Image (tube, rainbow, N blue to C red):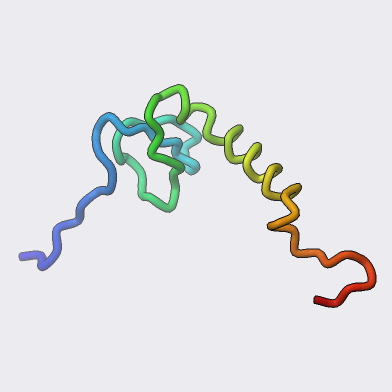
Length: 75
């Protein structure tokens, strides 16, 4: 008898983008480390990679997240 039941994360009606398979899935099909989400709609999940690229670009350009010090400064 198992001490712990293996439970999946998420609920039906939530949409995910599976990084491993490159597909949209409803509810938890693949492990959490291999997916983005949850998203409210299938459409949002389908654009998960575009959303991630857009956010990464915003963060890269945001001075609050820029780790490089201006020339002449060592802090």
